[in-house]
Image (cartoon, rainbow, N blue to C red; front, side):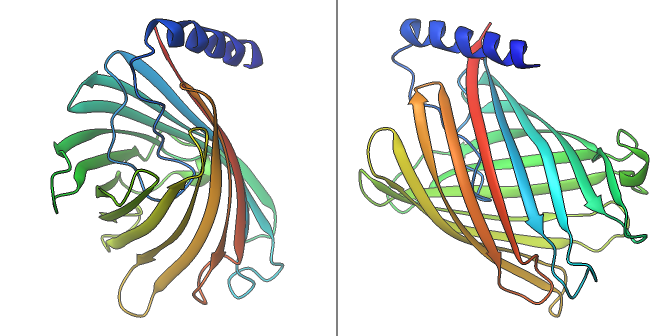
Length: 256
């Protein structure tokens, strides 16, 4: 896997000199707010991350850690209005028997479609739709049915260095018909042409009483126009939320 990663990185660097007119890489990580920008036509983009999450002690007696090692979002640009998406995650978490279970969550396929360019009060807008394939997962993580989700992602440019982005959407868990409403709000700031940062609030609401609100922040560093490193951390704001999480990631793109 390391050799494959090095191959993709070298391919990315080679393409950079040929496609220098392309904008710098835009990623959907590390924040929870998906960006409205699409992967360039004919390019593959991989966004890889590791995460450690401290579960809420009110939910887990031993207050154990959950690990996502890794999560990978693979994207491919079809045209200027459409990209394909594939999400794979390997999770190790504490189960009801107080033992760690390691496995693949349902394979998720989907797309992002551009809806509008930013113009005046109209934000840059796209829609993202995903479908988790419930049986394409490790035994412990299979669900009773497919797992659909969608979200609208919007962004306003505040200045040359600052933007305001937000998402609104809905997801289901594959085990019941109750929908969970998703919201995110983040402010991004460019400290330089390579270094950026953000602060964010986001949450999941499954009914009025069951609200999971959180906040987080992080930084990104672009080694080149085609490669980016990120680190982030977040805190739970509700009684049902995880206590905190820590994450780091590496994203890159290349063209065949």
